[in-house]
Image (cartoon, rainbow, N blue to C red; front, side):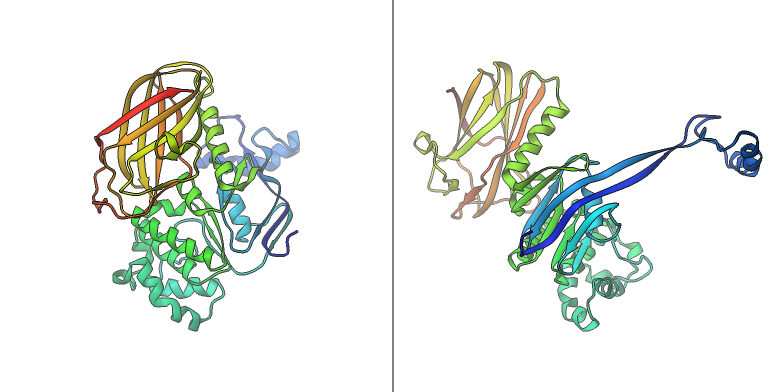
Length: 411
């Protein structure tokens, strides 16, 4: 075990016992029928002995044989399909539930945000819940008071601070809950998909806060189905599948494996499944270069390569540009073309691409004969290095018809 590991998980498993009601006089009975069966149960037991006609039990392992460690200051994204065990793992790490087997070692205070209103009392006001939740996290009243104004400013609920939180919307719940969890400076911050409830602007604030927490040496565990956020924020990723670790390592490789497997499982009947090879910025002279910078003085030219196992007809290519908060900025749809077997190089030239400095990403979607065969975010991101002539503002409508030139070449 590493000496600087802040989380150690050894042979952890979580088992649940599922009760199944079998058909006898029907799976659903009226309350009066249940009372009669309860009253007559002793007589039935004397007459027939213990009966299993109405219920059966099944063991279900939500997690099985998990072994990993996370170092201080790492941001780890936990990904996987619904039911893979992600939320169960976070509940165990948050000490909400105990593992059936194995051992977990946590070095430091843990703050968790697993669902809307975690740790809040609905009858108390926002102000009272800040102090309540802070006390649950082990903070003194003086420490909470020192952070109080920052929490309220971040959550943007000052107007409703003395209103019982039962009257809050789900978005307001999340804003206040995340603000408390993040500003009380835990050593370990655990966040489930609950941030999806908030609007895009608040999500961007939360991502910035988690980035600051990680740069300050705190550890962040994040469950999300947004692969753009995972790639941007997480230094490592863990892929769970049926309660077991499918992969744990560098984010790019784990996310690519997850997306490829998801596409193949969702559409096993597809004859044409494309794979993304690589992409780069610039013209043919930039092939193989590692640069992914874009400056307004450069031509807005991008290239990427696809691999097809066999020829495909009626292929339609869609390109979508998104910013760091996943806001859609540009959407381009390339006319149908014939895709030969092997490697296909696509070259896109835009007449203009006005963007402010920041991080952006192209999303590629490919449809063949009406079936989606590829949907992937391009890695690495596009880094804009100098200010251009415009930028999306609140209420921005995606540009659907930017002038462009696209060509593809079989390699």
